[in-house]
Amino acid sequence: MSLLSENLHPDLGDRLRDACAVTTEFMTDIISQACRRFPSQGQRGKTAQVERLIASGAWTDAALALLDLELPQWQVRRLVYDEGEWHCALSRERELPDWLDQSIETHHADLALAILAGFVEAQRATAPESRTSVPAVRRNTGALYEPMLSENFG
Image (tube, helix red, strand yellow):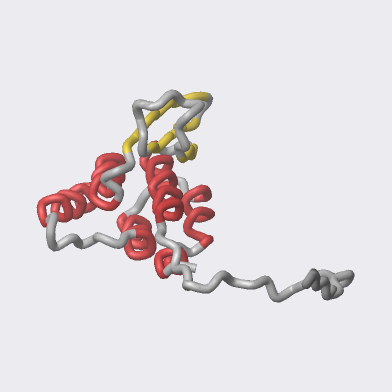
């Protein structure tokens, strides 16, 4: 499991689903748990812009700016309001047809929370996996497992 995956607490997704609105404290929690580049030394302008948007309470713009800072390869593919919920689709390949694209789709009654939920899912999807040079072996074998010797030297 990667360091970022460990930092992305599973309850963050639940908190996003259950939240009614974005607050400064909630946005700070999301940044501390899901962001690798914030604050960015190389992109101070973008970092300052996110901070200004959070301070002014512009949650939707802050969520989009955070997506641009943290995951520049991801773009909003679709934002749709339908039956009282915002549906957000994020994609790496926006120009591909829907059926070929592997987008992340989220929904919430609040637009900023729908975008932030997609952002957190995209962070999970792009988290680098730490792999060893030797493949892992499953430790729990079935009750009917019995080793068998089969040599054929002929």
